[in-house]
Image 1: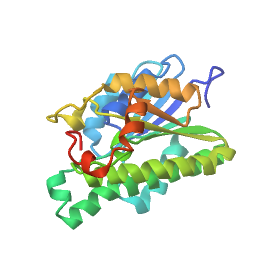
Image 2: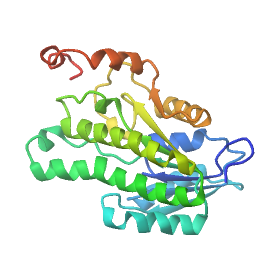
Image 3: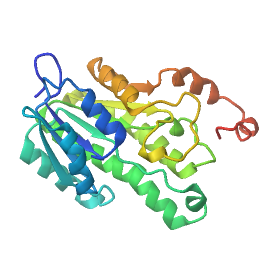
Length: 253
């Protein structure tokens, strides 16, 4: 359960080696945090990240989790919850950028990327939501992206998957709010992280730590959606209405 000040005590990070996800965990009130579960594909890498978090007062577990194995997602989440008890905050942070030169020409590669970035994230969110509805409380942080606000031709599969995930999370959050579960969507812009290594930074580029501060503040305020950085909200409000021919000529498309 969250403590008397509303700070989470038990956190589940799906995508346990995600730079943004780990930054969010680090940003929580460490005096309240008691247990963190890093669920990830690469257990050895997750264990290295766990060592950076562990302390005498904080237990950190690493469990193997394959997001694309959607048929077993509920069982995987149930096993974690059965082991640790109530989950106060779950962060759905796994995603892949993919290679757009491949995913715009290879149908199988496009579908595989969409499964991870959309299908698997939906499955994970619903699975966690089922457990939180049963316990009567909890917050789910869904990492979306401004790439889904208006999908760019530079990476349409990734952007399209994020657009779908973003829309799903909005509707799903409404569906389970009455059960005491809070869903918050995070729309980061370009974030300097392992996922974007070697990529040219977009305008208003940010860091995992900066995103994490916005996320933690949003959770405290029970926000339904946050942008990181905040300036991206008015920027994309304008970009959403740029005519298609002009949009295709912009450097960011």
